[in-house]
Length: 407
Ligand SMILES: Cc1cc2nc3c(=O)[nH]c(=O)nc-3n(C[C@H](O)[C@H](O)[C@H](O)COP(=O)(O)OP(=O)(O)OC[C@H]3O[C@@H](n4cnc5c(N)ncnc54)[C@H](O)[C@@H]3O)c2cc1C
Image 1 (spheres, helix red, strand yellow):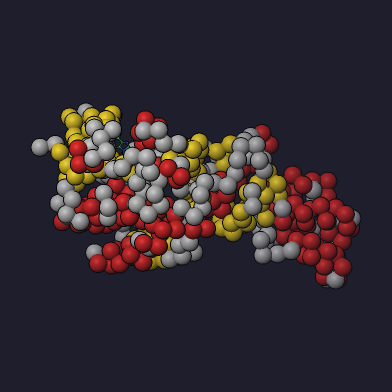
Image 2 (cartoon, protein in one colour):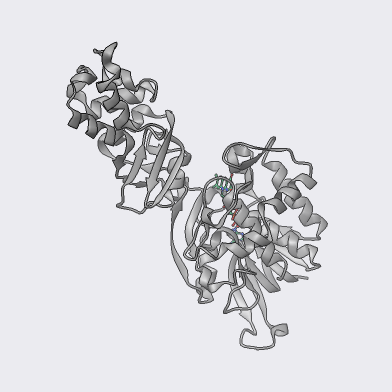
């Protein structure tokens, strides 16, 4: 008996949510998962505590070729709907920062919740089962009753009226990252937009790399701007370059060859700080050096690196003796440090894959292919990528729910 109403490919966040919703509508649902267990990314997410949604979800928190595409699904299954589900299961949670909701205890609770809901809805989950070919049978027949999808896998063949592709993106292959969803889309003639790593650390070379290496582990609040988008969050120096929330967020807006700008003093006008010190404040501290003046604002280790980079010849010159023009240049660098990343760390560490199945190919109300009735794409495989902070899971829940209602 390998015939189902609905087959969902992938037991990740989107696949499980879609399966349980479809099961609740009385559909006979089978989920095929190639890993040995479901929900691997859920388990690893949010440092083991799963940042499952955000209190403030808006279409502006998502990148997509069509920025309006997310609106319908997000409004029909909102963050409040998911929070209600979490509360129904008695899972304790808290807001960490910027509306981001995390489990108090463990991501395992979110996965257990989804699996329990699947079980109650009669959903079958087959793990260790990799789908490798899809066939549409009676596809030309206008009568939908005789059309079905045949899924060939390492555990045999399965058939269903509806096929939901929830195979995720390319990020972190060891956690299930796979290009199979894109292959299916292309097989059925759907346009797939170019993919690249998103929410990913940026890498550097040469002199700046040696600097980040020496500073690795140091984190500070900055504003990072890439393209037209700015993020005021923490930035972390690493052995390979820059990371931390401000950089991960900006990476989604950064294109190879472009620069980023870092404001090291997001709450201070550096020019005002330096010139007003020179004009008025120097009375008592005539001999104060630039590095001393910056101590209340930046970590000392970073100031010493910046000194070696930007004002080595003035290291021991009191601020009052530095020419106004030079102070202007240094203030400009402190508030607007322009850097050119060499690249990103790629899919090995990226939290998401940008690009994917073109939203123009799908109904924004149901996620169904406009060309192929019964074929659905949900979650990360679609060209929708959220900001850091619970938005990607919310997209998985919302897109899965609207599909689950109608599959
Ligand atoms: C380390 C890490 C931490 C993250 N933390 C957060 C966070 O805290 N908050 C947040 O909002 N987002 C977070 N994300 C992003 C979030 O995990 C993804 O956006 C989300 O998991 C996408 O869900 P999905 O169901 O579309 O894909 P996935 O969760 O990737 O699930 C796809 C599933 O399909 C399976 N599959 C693939 N190919 C096949 C095949 N041929 N046959 C059968 N099965 C197949 C895979 O094994 C996988 O289980 C994180 C990502 C990573 C990598």
